[in-house]
Length: 429
Image (cartoon, rainbow, N blue to C red; front, top):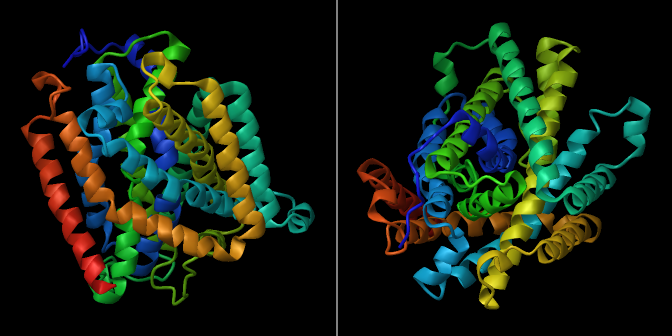
């Protein structure tokens, strides 16, 4: 049981050197759960699900924070914490990521490829199928990650996240100033009710991937080591958590903005919206342009594309990074040997090629794969949350570094809420 020296110190220079893992988490989270699920929430139910979006972000906060606090407090990764806590924690985590990783990468790349057609010249864009563009995006990200490693990921993602925040904020502000496209009042924005059995599948998807699956807590933990190697700065607990909080605040604000965007541009228009992410995103761009005029096309198309591209590149790093570190731990490696660049690079190639193969040869099955990934992410959320709490509140962490009464209380309530939804989901099946 250890505690990081000077864990309560926070300086601007230290924060600057520590800033990165939290931004990467934001880049990974602000993807399908925001552009698709949050916007669909606004499109279908107006403002009726804003409370649920805020609630799910709140109750998942302690579980995702564990990845950062545990590593800052103990000096080892959350995956090592799993291994030390109980023998089955780490293998279970790796099974979950194996069941979700390739499908999720392929899905976000497919949506990204579809959105890329809006940013190309009309003739050129029409000649390139979305699948080709999606595989091109995967190839670009693969080369960037293999060539520049964490440094390229860190620098590139900060620029992309900044662009998507600015473009989405401007797009939402423009929509709010214009007024609801349907012309309905604010009161009408709370109809129909989302609290029906027929809405349950959508609520499950929203809760499962909002703001992100809990296995991303391990990514934050591993990115701290990569950032330390890049900056040569060992972050204090306060610095690491400040970085995490900045990234998390961005994800929450963006989730609300996308709900507002969906409500103002799509709710009450009488249109039916596709459940397919790429088609839905195209509908959003078309309706937004129709509502505000042709000048808005590039703005919303750019916001949508950067949203999904940030998710593609962070997922193509995060899933392989956790697979590499986890398997090396199971093979007996310890300390710095857990974090192997060559192994990580190999797993990046494996995930990238597998995702491209899904897009090329099994596109018709991708919906089923994504559905499986969503269900696995959702039903394992309470279990992963419980595992994170056990590790954080256990013997490996000094009492002063464990979650305090407020965060622990939020986490315990969150476990109950998430477990109840899983039971309701199981009964409904």
